[in-house]
Length: 160
Ligand SMILES: [Cu+2]
Image 1 (cartoon, protein in one colour):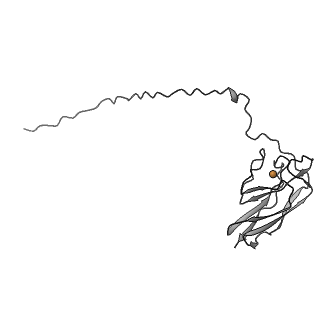
Image 2 (cartoon, rainbow, N blue to C red; image 1 turned 90 degrees about the vertical axis):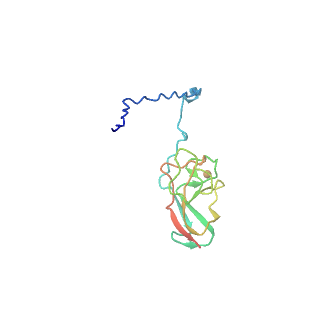
């Protein structure tokens, strides 16, 4: 005599009703009624022929850790930040920046985006050994880039 194990067929799987009680977020959204783009600053048109250029160092140069960068400008006036003379701007040095910042916002001010709001035409910066890129980017009185941006070629330098 053998006892056959009885097969238990589970015919139906009862669904688990997870009663998730999500607390209602009572957030007031009325302040978003007149929503604007985060930047919203209109870039000024770049004067025809306006140019900026890194006069030194030169592309491909090997330099020491302290590097004096000389800024060239033509076809547009150099003015301090805050001076809204039409057709003028001030230099910004972009260090190791691959992509230009948004056009409708002031250029960020940080270690990689240096402002020369006193209309300086050069700066001595300190870099770590290795390869770095430098690029000039002109900004208007509000530190906003032009449209199209007035930028120098991006140069690569090697720091010993
Ligand atoms: Cu600036």
